[in-house]
Length: 280
Image (tube, rainbow, N blue to C red; front, side):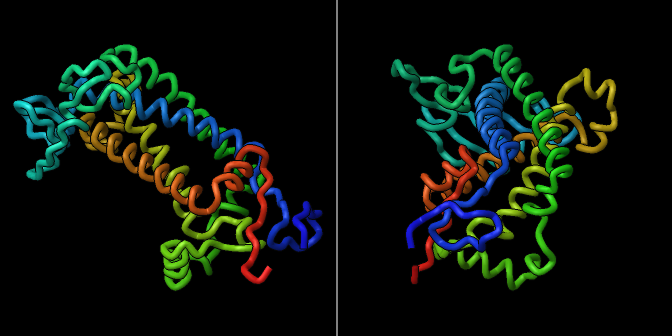
């Protein structure tokens, strides 16, 4: 059977081209990809100004940091609690493009700007933070209006059964991805991960970012109570940001394993070719 584009009234099969992503989803996806990259890189430059994280209201050099990236002598290190890992050449102590030794936490290739400039990094970060906040608000509202959230992202009761979730985990672990019409829909692992990002992670990272702003907490002092202080908010902000980085890495790995051309095309044009069953 040759591949073909099918009308919506016909049951799709392996090899058919089907509509997978709405225009609003595709636009939001690519804006988010660029926005999160800029936020991450500018955030790493901001972190370089004080590469330590604390819990509580205050936090300063004499206070014990639960996480620190630094250097001692000719070695770079990452310390989390009482555990210290040598990171020379990667974090804390590394060589720049000119071969000069630098002792900042994150290397220049991973930050915006690449040279140390806290004020400029804050401008980049704040600008794109508003892009992220406005984008998630518009996307969430539109997904509720057009039914995308209920239809495509909200797990069905049967999908939340432990047996079903475990089966999906086993299938993904063995690279046994859905075929035919089943590949056009999100599985329960995708739904749960996307909901955790859209409903939990991004709102938390936005609110903790606001908690670090003195002008915002002057207007909304309850933010300090919600997150346990400005330094706790900074720690939560960093942890959730790293969760988002992990999510993106897993997402990219799954795209590569499932077929990058087909997956990327579906997020650009909306059209997705259903993988064929082995018997087809």
